[in-house]
Every structure is written in structure tokens, then in C-alpha cells.
Length: 195
Image (cartoon, rainbow, N blue to C red; front, side):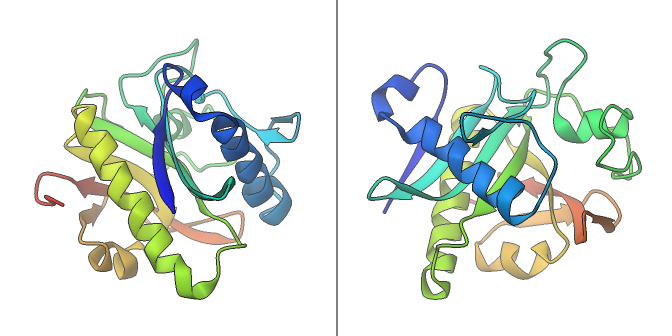
């Protein structure tokens, strides 16, 4: 099992991995979750998949097992910035505006995690290892990019698995139902996690 951080600058070094990550996102979010998202050529994408973002893929034998996107809270592309902030500003119909307790941050040391998934093909006895690899690489990549905090809209059960993965986090917004899933914005602090 390998874990790779992808960017527009290095994607050419990884063959089909970048495209396979977007194909796995389609399977997870459009096919499995039945979300109404943009797609082309069998891949899911959105307005936050820009050169400012980074993508993490856990993969084995050419199959993407899990993925995540990291976007700086300082990003800007037309009217869009990052998903949580744009939802708060009312730019996204599918996510309630009241998702944060305070105004969405814009700071070089805070990055957003989004499009987090673990493939349904991952057997239950491997899921924890896949999640640990995904989160470990997210922490490493975020630190390399200068982040000390990560903001993410995650399943509201995050407090159960966050401690198992050795992360320090706090609720940054209320629990809410989005497309039948109980979700919440969590703020992860990377400074206290040194692995």
C-alpha cells in the first residue's frame, strides 16, 4: 500500500494515479452517495480542483483505496475560495450557511480538507490502516505546505476516530444533516501531533 500527495506540478510523475483518484471520487460521491456533482470522462471534479490544491491518494496495485483534497484557505478562483467558506457565504446550495460557529478563516496556516473518502472496496479489516495512512499523509503534506490547522466538514462521528488516529481536534460548527449524513466542521490542530 502506498500513499502519495499529488499536485499539478508532480502529477506527470505518477501515471494514471491523478485520473484514478477522480474516478474513485466519482464512484464514492456520485455512484455510491448519489450526490449531484459535476463529472466528465468518468471523473468527479469541482471548482476547488485547481493548482492551489493538493490531493492525497492511498493506493495499491493501481486501485485508489482512499483520498482527500487539501485547499489553502487563502485560495481564490473567480468568485470561489474554499468549500466551507463558500458555503457560509451562500455560494453552495447543497451545504447550509450556518455550518461554522464563527466566520470562516483566511490564513496561510489553515488549510481545508474536503472530498474525503475511503472506497467501499476496502475490506473492514484494512479500513483503519487505510484511514491512518490517509490522515498521516494529510498531516505530513499540510505541514510541508506550512499548515498548523486543518478545517474539514466531516461525519459527526469524527470524535470517535480522531483520537484513534492521534489527532487533536475541536468542533468548529454545529452538527447538521447534509444529504442524509450527520456532519460537522472540525478544526484539527497539527502542532500537537508529531508523527
